[in-house]
Structure formats: C-alpha cells, structure tokens
Length: 265
Image (tube, rainbow, N blue to C red; front, side, top):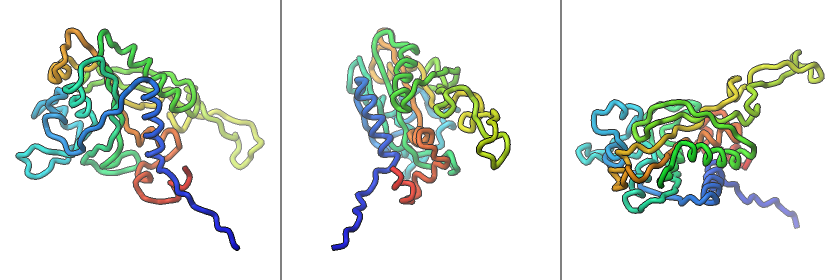
C-alpha cells in the first residue's frame, strides 16, 4: 500500500495572532467583548465625542449604508464595542474588543479597505497613563517574546484626553536602530558594516498604536461618573501586528487567499 502524506491544513496567521492576543489579555484579567459590524452613527461617532460635522470624522473614511437617512454604516473601528459594554456594565471594567473594521480608502502595501483591529479599555478609580504603559509593556513582551520598551508621544484622538501615539522598541534590532551587512557585496566572510535597521528605519522604534486617557464626555455618555472613575483606551491594527511579528511586507497578502502564505503557519 502506498502511503500518502496527510495535509491537515493550517490556521491563517490572522487567526493565530488573534488567538494569541486573546490568550495574553485573558491571562491579564481582561474580558473579550464583541459588537455588531453594522453600526449606528451614534455609537460609531456621537458617543465617542465625534458629533456631526466635527472635522475629526474625516480621520475615518466611512462606508455609509443606504438609505442614508437610517444613519447606518460599516463600523470604522471597534470603539463602539467599548461604549456598548460601558452602558451595560459598571466599573471596574477591563476588556479588549478585537474585530473586523472597514475604511473607504485605496489599498496598498500597508492599507486595506477591511482589516482587523484590537482595542482595549480599562475603567476604574485612579486609572492613569502609567497603568496604560505598564499593561502594554507586559502585552508586547509576551507577544513578541522579548522585553519591549514603549515611547509615548502626544497625539490627538477625540475620545481620549490626553491622547498619545505609542512606539515600541524595534523587535528586529532590539531598539538599537542598527543593522549589519557585509561591507563587500557577495562576500559572506567580509567584515560587517553598520546601517540603519530596515524595519524601524534606524530610529529604534516602531509606531504601533494610538491610546490615551478616556475622555470624560465618553464616560458620561455611557452613564459612568467621570468625577469618580477614569480609564485608558488603546487601539491598533491586528494586521500590522501580524506584519511586524512574521515579516509580512504587504497587508494584501493576508487577504489574497494564497495558500503559499497560509501553509507556512
């Protein structure tokens, strides 16, 4: 009898990454929250301190659904899940909201019209940016398998104040910003010369997510007393985490259906 090798199939790298993210955060005491992909204008924008005609709405290229007077859309982020959860639960709150989101924008190597996003929310008494930084340092260390330094830079997001962009120390060069290559092309035994790391462009850091302290108006609109409670929130693209961890250089590969990609995992 001729034996044939059984092809057991492979999980997609996005699926594997979401499994890992969920496991890390549940180990840290977070609950996984879900919500609808077809959202209302209220939950996607108004409840997040982005009222109609606010210029910040231009930051989210939106797929509006007909009829337009119904004010329904494909969610542009998973932040509405946080609002829905806060309406139904009292603090302390500690959740992540992974899921698919949609943006009306041209596709290229780093952008897709649909992608997966991870958002997190913690609400309690005396919650600060220090708690945010410590939580994310622990997450990234577990996710990338090595110590990760975080850098916070001021930024603007309408649903947090203050808002920050978070950079993580480059997992490839270890934050040094250096790369090495043979000083003479084609010679593997020639001395190595230094050059900037190709992943972080020599900076030692990679921009990885937006975050901040939850805006008091967002808490109040969800029925939470902003004088008693505070919180932090963060959000990033799961696709981007896949690209960084596994060296995928074009996000469109994740949605191509090409088994040559999937079979590597």
